[in-house]
Image (cartoon, rainbow, N blue to C red):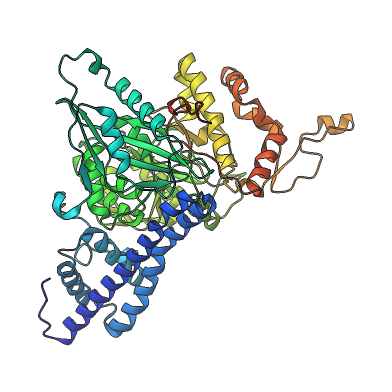
Length: 589
């Protein structure tokens, strides 16, 4: 580690600030890792409530340590705290301190966070912070010890058996022979050409050394290669039968299935590794269509994912065609948010309006609290994750006069024009999807049936996770490229257990029957499921299909039963693969 020569008091302060921030980063990382290290024990002991609490606890670690660092740096810097020259020197010193650090990029983001908490996010400059440039070192197998390779074999069963032996649990397998047989059959079915090959089968397997834990599952992730074909990424899902044994529930094979496993509507993995940067490099090879910020996000490093997203955004803007401009996102204009994007972008930007359109009765602070609620919730693959930014800069020339005027009119308190930049003081970034109300307009009969099934299933899975969307109109749900329905409008979202589901009172007379307004008292948390058919106004075919699969959502009893289950401590099963992909255990259970 290179040491800087301290030749002045100012440089001495800069050096101490840099060392203090690095010490706080190491403390943050240690606490983050300590929570993560408990994931296997929680899985083995079926502590599902503990799994959710650990996830919430881990999300608090970063900001807590930034707050500690802020106090320490304020004490050390004292009257130099607002000195830009001091911060510039502190950045240079810090860069040298972490130059050989295994997680230098993540540590640099922590430096940025401390600076932002002290100086304000509106004063961020690349000269003071680690913002734009980042060179990724290649994965070093001997140094990083992220992956291992099994001996090549002509016997797939032996290869799979050897793979499972690399991971040690305190619990026995329910039936390892059965599970390996099921794995073998699933792999052979995927590599169907194996049956027609005249060459002796030749299997090569590589795997990541760390298990991935999320919800009630553990995953083994790696690649499998047949003969001299391309390596195929895989993920093997292991579950706890809650009777003292584990079993293999499914195997996901190929980029498409692993992409859904690492999807943007899922909660974060817990991965036992002290080298997350190296793991992201490894995952990037398995999932080349995933951006690095998506992978950092998937393993819980959400603050650094924001740094990576900003670099991605800047790079994407530079590559935009000259005639491409920001435009309103597809769908009905929001009453709470102004949403814009570009034609070829995979992301939308959501800005809270200065005033909300009636009948919305909610404050700006309450909207932000709803988004915080989603960040801390188990999203069960049905809630879009968001990145929250403050003072996010855009190229002003990319905004059409009409969109610029709209932003200034609807969200003027959040818009700052500075030279060639349009700066949003506060903005959320979400993955772009096709709004469900638009999707059904051009969907085929088969697609309509599938998406209506998905729509109701999304509502039911959210309910089982103690989440009530609030406004369940189709315009608030999106359809992903995989055909999954995901909720993305959070201004009315709340815990399901806070809702009061009621049956509509029966009118006692003609006056009540013809009344334009409700003639009975309604509390803020009262929900009448019998009114849900209004969501399908104007699309009777969609309504008919929805009711074929999910008519039970119209009854208060469905919701009350879910509430009872949640209050009894039940945690819903969440599978990032179809029910049909689950292995049969009927021979044993």
